[in-house]
Length: 139
Length: 110
Image (cartoon, rainbow over all chains, first blue to last red; front, side, top):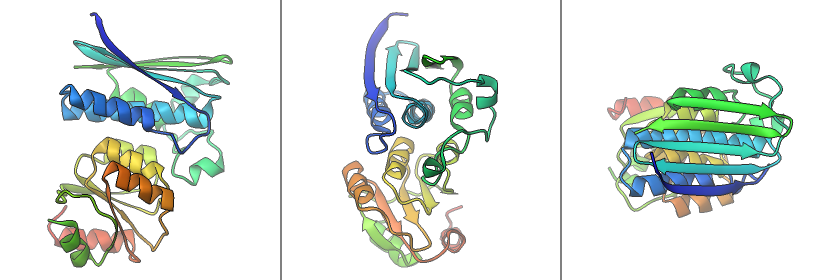
């Protein structure tokens, strides 16, 4: 159960140029330690969705990847403004993304559902001060 | 198959070519990135009209084989620089996603 390593990235709000860099780095780190490619795909999906949610919906935050012997845990924390209705936000197809972001192909309303689908344990807490997401992928 | 032969067979322009042979095991057509993330798999070719640099991150994260940009959409310069940096092969064509898909099917890629 000991934490072997933590990878951490600062994610900027509304910065689509750097968006995805943390997820990409996490993927290459996990690939280099021999994580199975099917599991790597699940981690890449949940990481990217979580990272893009910080970029699109928050005022900025952090993305972490905790590596354990038996699991990978992806964590995000942002500084708000939070999700008023988590149940509604978890509905496939529901999105509050602005049109400018939708034109880029984001805001399909599949971000949170994808995070839940591809993680073994999905936990989310949100308030006006920010959103915390914890996604566990068992190895 | 190498990128040049593939481009000739499908009448595609090569925008960025990586050094590796193309290994295409499937096809996904889509423009909504979360749905592509969920459905496209390793070694798939991705047919899209999206042209910005974030599509390169998606292709890299999923280990896609290549991207085919259809409908003569102009791919942004910074997206091509990113593709080159990430070693992602990118093609473009005037044809529609459907026309390209039909050709891929004829090549035996289903």
